[in-house]
Length: 174
Image (cartoon, rainbow, N blue to C red):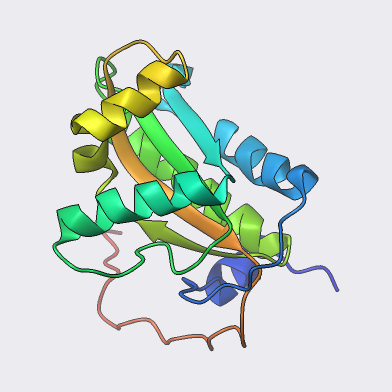
């Protein structure tokens, strides 16, 4: 059954428990494509996306991210895929552009039947020696800032229910 966009937005939830089932590359590519089509200031397209599917690399990222958080947990909740969004700091709208990229990817993941969750601390992660080493290893040059991660995978359990929106958040000037 096809859902309209507003219904997709209403029913999307942050998922914090993933099965270990591998996500096909075709689905990962669709989620990434949704991010690449996010709006950006003056259509600069200043974001980049790093897709991490190697379990050992995800574990390294998890340790670095958890250390920044100051907790000994897996901040990616066992997701088999981590998509990292970085944006060129020279663009005046880079934080917003990267945020829209992540938002598009979260919605596309939901549309494809995948779970996802926006994970923070990418800024600190990619300012660290470990993060800079990842960028060098991938041949990424430039002045990029980590905007966030998208934990991605199949949901282990049920999709959480819709949470009502807080009232009093919209004002009209008519």
